[in-house]
Length: 123
Length: 111
Image (cartoon, rainbow over all chains, first blue to last red; front, side, top):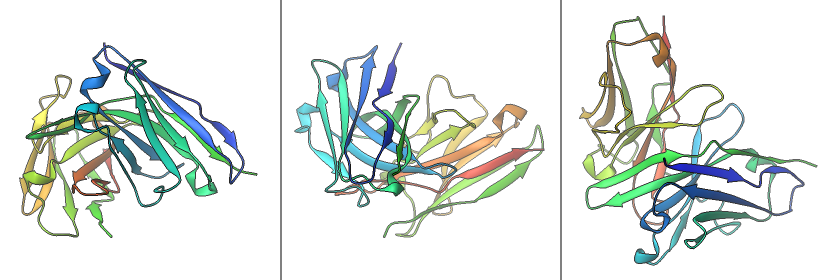
């Protein structure tokens, strides 16, 4: 059974840092890209960032709202994807979800999602 | 700035049919945008329904279908059930440095 479990959320002051983890199980982690998506309270979904498989360089892409502040990485040996969030702002307050992304010649598929972890940025 | 637009809200009667759409301000949505559709109920994580325009997951009820319609991505629910009341989001792929953009969501009410 595919499972994604986010952890590391909590209350943090503006300007500080936080690292989220997404621990995967039930599939070969290295075979998939991973993405982070967030949802501010009462708002819609916002794509945050994406990390490719190592076979495709393990490169990353980010939304303009977080570029330069957030960094996604992965440890395939542990089946974990990370979201390092620096210089946090109050507007980063949201539930953060990780999602598995299947990428192929004719496929882009955000098929499995974690349950999310809440990040609250407040003084 | 890339904007993906969905109907903010729609209402449908049980047993009825409803189509939700997903438009891009960059022009017509094609299969190259690999439209994904998700369902989200209050307090729950999003659940994938459709990927790459029209492909269903093993858990996607048969009454859900995806297509391209009039330059937009579309999600059609046929024979709507009360449990289909939820928020629905589309996701489009643009490639490049910021490849993915979500629509604002459609709140579907079954009444």
